[in-house]
Amino acid sequence: MASRRTFLQQTATTAFGAWALNHLPAADLLKKKRKLGVQLFTFFPSFEQDVPGNLKKIADTGIVDIESAYSLKGGFYGMGAKEFRKMVEDLGMKWRSQHVLGAPLKPNPQFDVSKMPKFNTLKNESQQIVDSMAESGVKYLVCANYPHDTLDEWKEGLAVLQKTGEQAKKAGMVLAYHNHASEFKALDGVIPYDLMCSQVSGDVLQLELDLAWASQAGIDPVTLFHKYPGRFPLWHVKDFDEGYKNLKPVGEGIIDFKRIFAAAKVAGTKHFFIEHDMPADAFASIKSSVTYLRNM
Image 1 (spheres, one colour):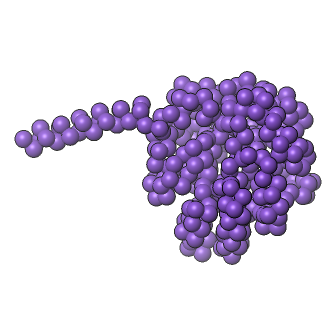
Image 2 (cartoon, helix red, strand yellow):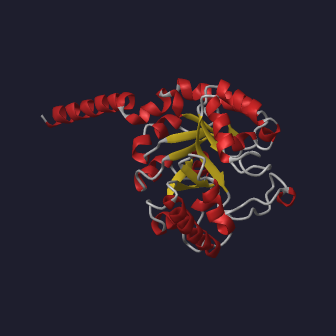
């Protein structure tokens, strides 16, 4: 009887699992066209050479949700918030979130920081940034990173996030933090990401999990969702090759996206954005990612 009972329990569990993947909101992330999004940093810096034309090409891929990033032209790719929003919406897309820098950039091997314009940062201009978003209608303001080499720098960043999160909340927006791999590397025995999640409450700071960078750091996204349930309204979806050395279009690498998407309800996910940092051909990469996600 015991073995029969175990068999029936296992069969029921398997049946429910199959049903859940096809019926719970997690699966709807891929079924609803409006849920496919892209982070415009994928097209940096060439995007600004033809903003209307590039947005049209993005819309033609079937992408609907847009997450913008800091712009070499200032403002929102050389425009005000209302103008950029209208351009996006005229193409049938939605502007969901905006990336901003937490603090001034440090030297980066990908580009010469000294030759880049001065960007407003949350450290120095948080209220100005929040005010500039007031007319955008965008719900999420995302700290793209907070440069840190020491625990003290990270603690400074947490104070900045606390302050900005409160400012954003007063303005009707939600502040979120976007990770790279460094936030999961211990500083003086402390994991910065865990310190952030424990010190800055969820009603002030939500999280945008970059699935690829977290995976490169040895972090299982699904385990993280269960550790901080409901705190991940946004994702960055991109892939890595074997050994986590080179970024790849979604589905061309080693990350198990089916398993991750199945946990979207636990994560509290509302939107996800395809991203590929500095690809050789941004539109080819995005089209490949869109095709994979549609067929996943």
